[in-house]
View (spheres, rainbow, N blue to C red):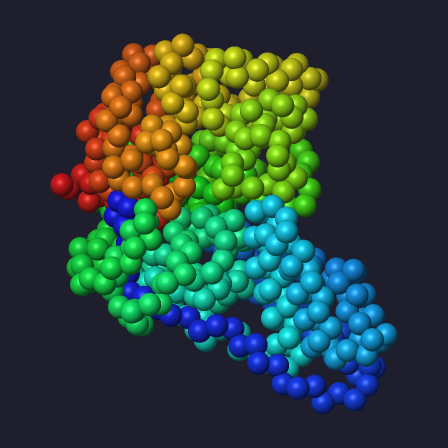
Length: 505
C-alpha cells in the first residue's frame, strides 16, 4: 500500500537466477556449434511462448520481449560466437561469455540509456547459458501469486522475471543493483509500482518481515501490519456510488488493457491516455496509419467515452530511443513538425468516428498553444478533412509553474489537465521523480494558493479541469485537493477505490 511518501508490505526475497552451467562434454567444434544453435532456438521459443502467456496489464513487457526476440537473432552476435567456436575452438559456454561480457562492457562506456540496457544483455546471456545446460528453472517463484501486500526483493531483476509473477498486491520492487532507466523500471512505472535500487536491502531483514519504506530516502523500517492498509489495498469493500457522486472520475491510463471489458458507470471519460507508451522501445517512429489503428483500438474499447489523447510527451524518465536529445514536451513537438503533424493527422482522422480529446503536454505560454493549433488548422484544410464532421476537443496540460501563475493569459482550449507531479517538483525545487516525491511536496502552500486561483478562473470560464498524477492517486493529497475545490480527478484505474475512503472521512 502506498500512503504519501511510504509504501508498506511483506518482504519476499527472490532467489537469483540459476547460472551454474555444467562443464561441456562435447568433443569438437561441430558439436559446440550445434549446441549453441540449439540454445538460440530454445531461447527464441521461450520468448515467443512467454509473449503468449503475458498478462494484458504487462503490454509494455510484451513490447520489450519483441526487442529480445530481435536481439537473440542478431546476425553480428550469432556470427561472432560461431567464429569463436569454429576458429578459436572455444566451447559454446566460453564463446557466449566472451561475446556478451565484451558487449556489456562497451555499453557501460556510453550514456545512461545504453548503460541501462546492460541488464537486458545479461538476461539474454544467462538464458543462453541455461539453455545450453538444459536448466529451465530461472527463478524460484515461477508463476507466484501474492494474497497480501508484498514487496519483492531481488539482487538484480530482469524483464523475463516479471512475466512469471502475478503483480496484483505487489506494492514495490527492490533491487540491490540495477538502473532506474532499465526496461524493468519502464515496465513497473507503467503499472505504477515503485522500483527502488537499495544496495543494503537485505541487511538485517528476512523473508516475510512487514516493513515501511520511505520513497524519499529509501529507508526500510520493520513495523507491524496495519489492518486498515490491508483492507484498502485488497479492495474488500465495493465502490459506493453515492460517495462517488461527489466527484467525477476520468481515469488516466497508459495501456489499452487498462480499460475493462465492462466500463463502470462512474467513468465519465478516459481523462488521459499517454501515447508515449506506444512509442517506447520501438526502433522506429510509427507512421500515421499505425498510430491511427492503435488509437482506434483504444476508442473501441472505451465504448463511446471520450478519450483524451496526450500528444507524445518525451521526458527523461520516459526515454524514446529515436528522439533522444531532441527536447521534451511541447518543445519537442514544435521543433519536429513532421512528428507532430503525423500524430495530429492520425488523431483528427480518428475524430471522424469517435469522441476524442487532443491534449498538449508541458504548455508554458500562449504562443505554444497557437503554434500547435496552427498545425491543426493546416491539416483541417487538407482535402481529406474538408467535408468531415470531427468530434474532438482541444486541451492543454498545466505542468509548469509559469503556466499556472500566468494561466489567465492562456486561451484557445476546451479543457485542462493539471499535472501534479511536475508542478509539485518545480514548486518544491526538487527533481521530478515519483520515487522521490512525498506528500508535503504535493501540498506545497504556494502551489495550493495558485491552484485555488486557477479553479476560480476555470469556473468563471466553464472550462473542464482534471487533476492527474499522484495528486489524484495519494489519499491524503486527494482529500486536500477536494477541499481546494477540485471535483474532476484522473487517477490510475487501480486507485479509484481510494475515493470511497476520501469521501468517508
